[in-house]
Image (cartoon, rainbow, N blue to C red; front, side, top):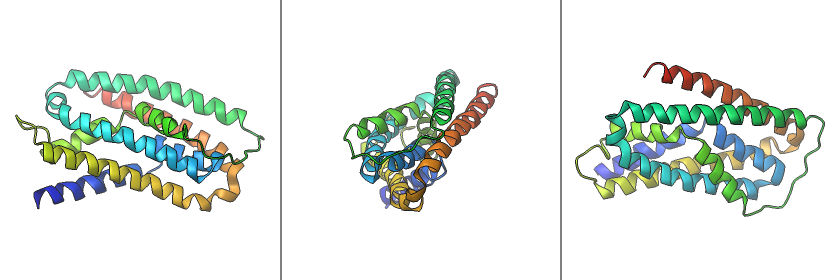
Length: 207
C-alpha cells in the first residue's frame, strides 16, 4: 500500500511538473510540427529515458544534496550557463526562420538522441525530484530502500512520458499552423530561458 501511494504521488507530481510549457515539452511539440508525430514521439522517448536516470540519481543523492548547500549552488550555476546559451540559440533561430516554410519530414530514430540531449540540458528535474524524494522520505534514510527507489524512478519516468505524449496527441491542434508555431515556439523557448535565468539567479543569491 505504501509503495502504491509512493508511485501515484510521484507519477502525478512528474506529470503535472511537465505539463506547463518548458524546454522538453516545447521541443516535442516543435519536433511534431517540423518532422511529424513519429519524430515527436521519439523525442519524448529519449527525454523520458534521461528522466529515468535523473530520477534515479536524484534519489541516490537526496541525502547528500540536502546536507550540502554548496553542491546545490554548483548545480544552479551550471544551469545558469546552459540557459544563457540556449536562450541565445533559440532567439537567433527564431530570427532566421522568419519567412521560411517548414516541411514535414519522415521520422528519424536520431530524434531519440535529440530528446536525450534536451533532457540532459534541462537540469531542473534533478532538484525537483530530490525535493519530491525528500518529501516522500525516499533516499534520505541511512540505507537505500531499493523497491521504493525503483518505484519512484519508474513513476517519475511514466509521469513525464504521459505528459509529453499528450503534447504529441494534441499536435493536430497546431498542425495546420506549422510555420507560425515553429517561429513562435523558438521565441517562446528563448523567453522561457530568460525566465529560467532570472529564477536561477534569484535562487543562487538566496542560497
